[in-house]
Length: 276
Image (cartoon, rainbow, N blue to C red; front, side, top):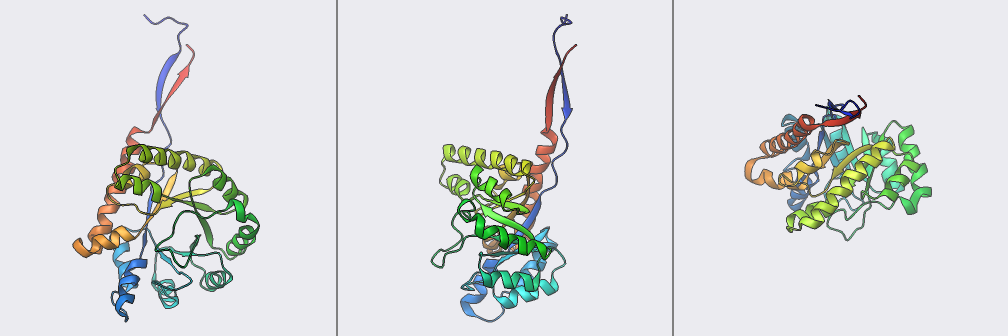
């Protein structure tokens, strides 16, 4: 018999995690096009196929050196897309002027160096609060949602809240590289950083996104973090498209993410203790 003084244990469902969005980065379709010139393969066609296969939004990075996406691509995407368009860009007067002229649904501010192959690590918000705050304010006044591409570091999250951005996008590159190299301790450590960072950002009223290096083998644990509401993926999906087509590539990622999210919803319960 249960002693009347013992607490009762009950299990109740937590509020369901929100659906997770899939943003497709089409930069490397433009990389392939630019290798020979002309318009083929056209990033616009890639964007349309991605949306048809389950993408919720489209992302393109207009770099200062225009190594892949160009100004004409931005104009055509803005004119044709019927889903939100997210423009990745550096924190420069030129990019601010372009964003204000086109007014995409959102921008993601990223660090950028001419010599890098791809974005390396997150933006240092802590040391650039004075520069970022007015930059973000001007974008937001134009009705543009602003995200900052950062590492899942507590200080960077606090600084992101301080500069009044709408969202943060966590750099998942270290986690993905550790998974690729077969380094379980680093995978576990980086996944913990993502989980704790997502909780901290959500508690600071920041929308939480993630991306960089995600593929079918490593995306599940990230998609299962309930506070993360959007993943942005590009290079892997464009690479897979060479073998199976872009539509199937996006559809497989969509299904993998949704399965991880569905598993989260089925297991999302909490224990409560009450007195007799």
